[in-house]
Length: 409
Ligand SMILES: Cc1cc2nc3c(=O)[nH]c(=O)nc-3n(C[C@H](O)[C@H](O)[C@H](O)COP(=O)(O)OP(=O)(O)OC[C@H]3O[C@@H](n4cnc5c(N)ncnc54)[C@H](O)[C@@H]3O)c2cc1C
Image (cartoon, rainbow, N blue to C red; front, side):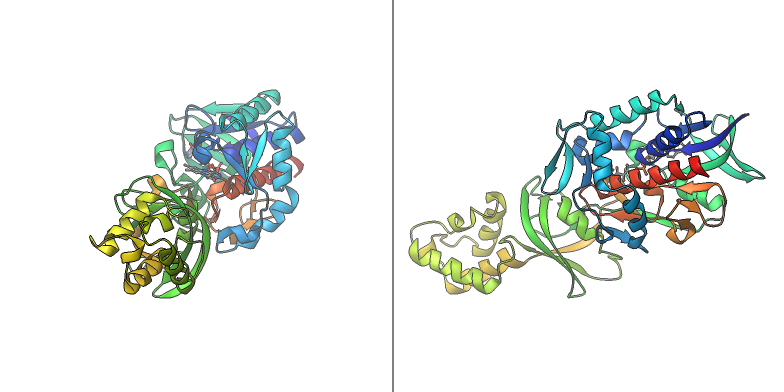
């Protein structure tokens, strides 16, 4: 049986960065990374629609969710967004800032993965690909790691960086929770986060692929929960896109509570102000179709659906629209209500709620507070960020701290 000082389960950003940092600090250290897929970083390649939204210009605990968002403070004070950006730019990757979101300039997530693979080769890191870890066990001076092909390795320190269960089509599983629970580390069930919503809304449903920007207000049983301004997209089943995914962070149980997303297509203008503006436009443009008023701010497929639905075959010329109809249109365009019937599943989720309980982990080292030598990083943990580069930042920062902690212990 091969014996190591440090073994990593999972070849995603967290696992790769941990191994790299360990080898940079301890070049002769005996370490191995085991990845079940035949290649490293499959999920990383899918990030940002294949463009990789690496991080965000401003990263703070306000962008994270779960039982203890403050957990990230220590991590980011030691490896920040600037540190992550410098790591890649110093190695030849050009990055660009898109409204605070940092993407690869080339539009290729593979630029990021190529650097990581090159750096891992440079430090002569040992990597086992295409072999799934089946089971782990705590032994006297470390951990036994059994692969599904019957081989085993032994390691003094073990990092569980096998990610979350989102996007199972890329090979993701709930193994992180399985391994942690074997070690008696407390975990919660993984559920989809950052996903679309199913809505039985009759106007927008089925209007596939229309992108728009709006202010979204989430109501839970009629009470305001949050307000998010951003981009969204209509889908066959309801709504998706970054702003809607961020809203799902605040949706708990759709069976127990009634959730409605109010969409203000007029960037937060009140219904009253909208009515005044629309009325003035109609008075001055009696011969124009009322669609002309909305065309600057709302995609025409959406405005046509709402106007046709509300005017029900009446003349759409501005001069012919009644006071009541102007009121109703103003109401719809500033407070369109999409009832949330349920959230989309793991197949479309970009993150997971749940995983390893943060109270079980020391944020200074990412080591288990109960089991010496056992570490966690990335999506395996019960914390997740908004859309915008926050989840990769967490994976890289937490991985970096594990690698550094194991190397200096
Ligand atoms: C479609 C999509 C788009 C996204 N876009 C962004 C974005 O633009 N910006 C952003 O910040 N975040 C994004 N995310 C989230 C981001 O990808 C994750 O937060 C990040 O990949 C987490 O890294 P990780 O290393 O913890 O886990 P992962 O990247 O999931 O890596 C875990 C690895 O462990 C391996 N593994 C699992 N079980 C075993 C086992 N038993 N044995 C061996 N290996 C195992 C898996 O195959 C996997 O390669 C996106 C996610 C998705 C699904």
